Length: 137
Ligand SMILES: Nc1nc2c([nH]c(=O)n2[C@H]2C[C@H](O)[C@@H](COP(=O)(O)OP(=O)(O)OP(=O)(O)O)O2)c(=O)[nH]1
Image (cartoon, rainbow, N blue to C red):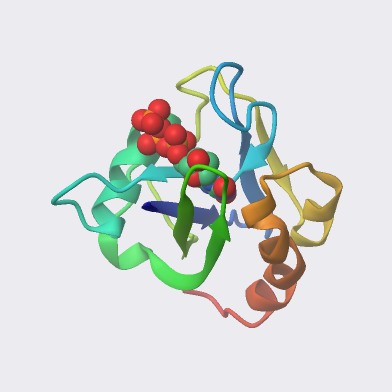
């Protein structure tokens, strides 16, 4: 089974990236991830992400502010994850932990210090380079 999850690398003015901790009771609990979630039927990945960022973090993101950055593709025991990852540098509102989740703003090079789902391992390695080349979207 293929599961489509949209995720976002939110980058603030200082170049820090937001990661959030998966809460207890969910699969992969306690691991840090990029905000996002499953794309529902009849939703585009962009609209799923805009919805999740509003629900999880209370921020408004406009579709043009989402730039395709990279993707993850990983086989978990129960499904195969395909995860388009977008870059977002512009949003309105203050980032808040709407679901009580832990949040961390980290330097891209420091992502390797955080335990993340196995699907995210390659992303940790390539993000510093990708963000260094990504310009000012
Ligand atoms: N958001 C996000 N999900 C990730 C990442 N890496 C990774 O393996 N995943 C996996 C974990 C989950 O199996 C899946 C996301 O599903 P989820 O259950 O959190 O999505 P959701 O917010 O729609 O949750 P729910 O409605 O089912 O509770 O993608 C990541 O960096 N960000």
